[in-house]
Amino acid sequence: MLFLNNLVTIAKQVFILYIIAGIGFITDRTGIFKRADAKKLIDLLFNVILPIAIIHTFVTMDYSKEHIKGILIAFVCAAATHIFGYIISRFTFKKQDIKRRGVYSYAIIFSNAAFLALPLAKSVVGDEGIFYSSVYVAVFNIFAFTLGIHEISGHEAKIDLKRLILNPGSMSVIIGLPLYLLQLHLPEIVLRPLELVGSCNSPLAMIVFGTFLANSQLKNLFMKKEIFFVSFLRLAVIPMCMLGIFYLCGVRGALLTALTISSSAPTATNTAMYAAKYDNDTALGSELAAQSSILSIITMPVIVALATVAV
Image (cartoon, rainbow, N blue to C red; front, side, top):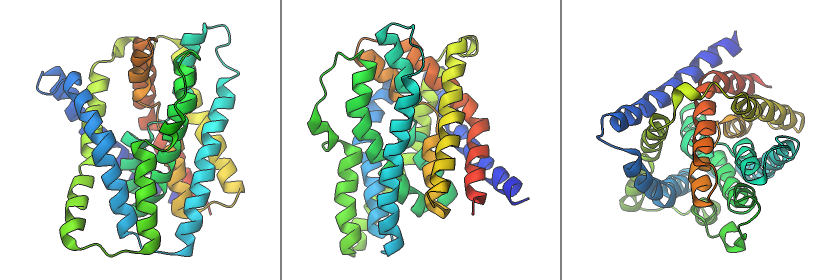
């Protein structure tokens, strides 16, 4: 009974987010806010609004030893999830050429941790959800700017080690963590702007997400078995395996739910953008992200509900 109640609650939160994405879908199709406009907004979201949302959460979160321990566990679990995804990707699509295989690999390893998982974690777990999910986002960026670029470029791009630290996700945690540890009480004139700007992250991220769905060839999404296979790995195999591993390692409560949300999110929307940047198959990247996003409406509530009833 508890599982069903949680399933309904989480499904509602997922649908709410996708309704917001529907606004982006409609505004793109009507020409009010096109994907080209959304691409410009992504830079603002990724480089400014998302980091501010993460920093605000760290500044306002009450200090506890449990949270400190949770941060360390979240970092290890997030890294383990990406490594596990990479291992799985090494056994798939071996007959594909190295460039196309790189797109599949990226889609399997990297979830939509910032644009979908973070808003959902906020809705389901509250500020504690963002607190732990922000660590996952930081780890995501570390792997995306190194392993991810290596894969999606067909092993051609050079890895810039400076991007391990000098990226918005990592920097927001680097800034926010000391503020949390020191428990500095910032004045209202500083906190309120951080709160207002940070609160824009979820709706704007989902509207942008909707514009990407609007530009996908929806009728072609369910005709390629390879894309179904990637969605199966991204939405079912990886999150279920990681949920089991997290549980066996003693992870519970809000931390388990936040990590499960991040690991069960659909393929990262930047799969298509990175494919375009490194002269790879942009259409394939869009199709992989779009199909897994649609199917995640069904899979995420089930998997996250399982995490919420784990005791």
